[in-house]
Length: 144
Image (cartoon, rainbow, N blue to C red; front, side, top):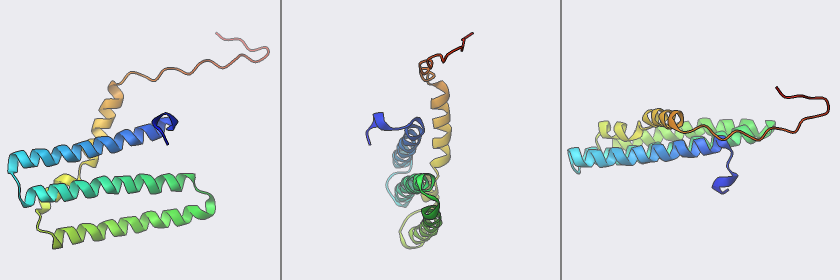
C-alpha cells in the first residue's frame, strides 16, 4: 500500500509510529551522550525496540479487529490479548535475564506517551486539510 492509498486515519497512525520510533532513537542517543555506553544505554535500546515493536503489533492486530467479519473478530481479539501476555513475558525475560538497567528499559519503552503529545502538537500546528469539493446540487436544492 503506497502513501497515496492510505486513508487519513492510516496516515495519522503511520505518523504516530514514526514519531514513536524517532523518540525512541532520540532517547537512546541522549542516554548515550549523557550516561555513556553501559547497562543504562542497553536498557534504553532494548526498551525502545520493544516499545516500537509493541506499537506496530497493536496497530496490525487492531486493524484486523476493525476490518474483520464477526466470526474472525473474536479470534483477532484473542490474539490481541495473547500479544499482551507475550509482551509481559518478554519484558520479564529482558529485565531478569539481560544485563541492562531497568530504569533505562523504562526510558526506552515509555516513548508512547511523549509520542502522543508530539503527534497532538504536530497535528494542531499543521494547516487544515484542503476542503473536499462541493457535491453537485440535486434537483430543487439551493446553497446559501
